[in-house]
Length: 127
Image (cartoon, one colour):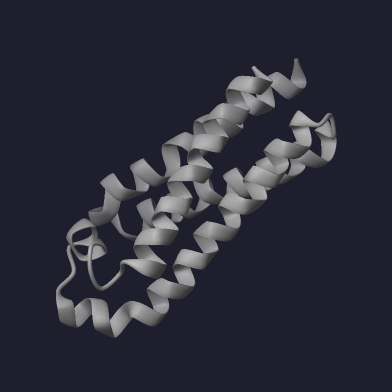
């Protein structure tokens, strides 16, 4: 179960690296189609999106470092980082879902992998 939890949270980390790319690199170009923004909206919000993208990247990095630590038998520290990183991803998706119901699909896409990964990892750690 631990390995399954790490695979799922690793996939969540990769997804959040992609979200970083969309928000911090491609916000005024390719991301406009993904997020449904106009050129004017993208230009007006690019600094906010750039910053938000880095939040996603840092959560992915914390999760990835945790996975590596578990893999090299530093289970406690690694699990703490994975749970903090992926748990924060899931919590952020819950906030998006609760505060912006029109972004339900995005919240589900963003939050499902980390939520399931955290649950599976916790079950594995408690076994």
